Image 1: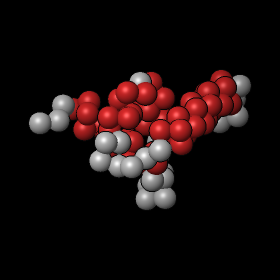
Image 2 (image 1 turned 120 degrees about the vertical axis):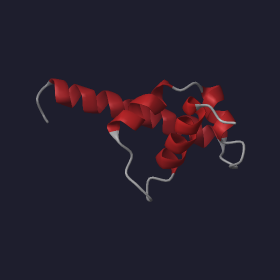
Image 3 (image 1 turned 135 degrees about the vertical axis):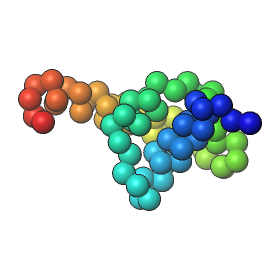
Length: 77
């Protein structure tokens, strides 16, 4: 049986890597950027995601969150 965190994690991982189905919210990006590599790799056991591609996407998502927060801080939003 999946824990609440695991269920949330799987939903977020799916949404982050399949953005064409539904845009990812900022809250999901923030939570995703805090996940460990092991948590993400475990959630991809069913999927055949390439870990190098996953790491690259995580880096880009973390940068996206930082950029958004900086813009918000300086009044762009």
